[in-house]
Length: 185
Image (tube, rainbow, N blue to C red; front, side, top):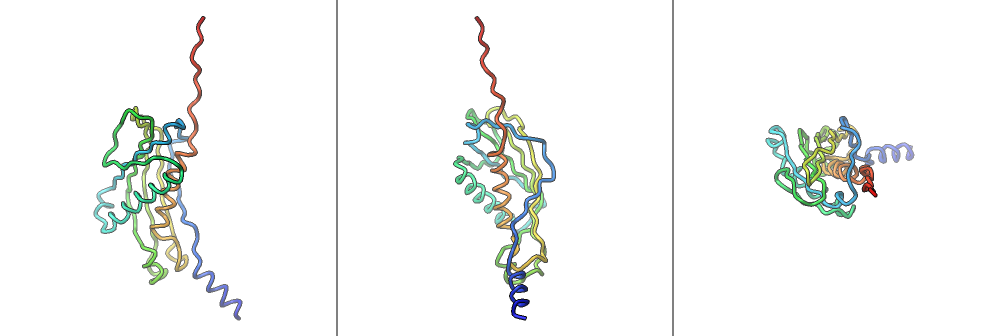
């Protein structure tokens, strides 16, 4: 009997890792290693997302989590209001939050599974900072199950996972092919 109660308690109180699904991709990114060190981010939202009362909370969370992920990857990150080019090697990341449902961990802990699901839908485009050329794009959706547990990952943890995924895309990008200078006699 005690074992059953303990197993039930562990099942109710444990959470799972936040999941980030990539539903669309334009293929492999090709980014020079030197360009990876300078990352500029432009955050945007759809009218629907901006009308959500929690948009500023989500925006702040995205900015701070992207900063943290970039810092741990030894990248320099700057946030801009809009996408632009500058004469420095780097990557411009345009994040467009198309829709989301923001749930705090506190609310989830107090109300449990009755709070429903939390999720974030985002389209992310990667551009060459100098030329403005599109390097690739991704469509992400974070998910959690409202009926998971009391400590399922809510929006904050999902944003952490999404930020890690965005920075990981830059880290894992392929190098451009080496082109040797022609040697003419």
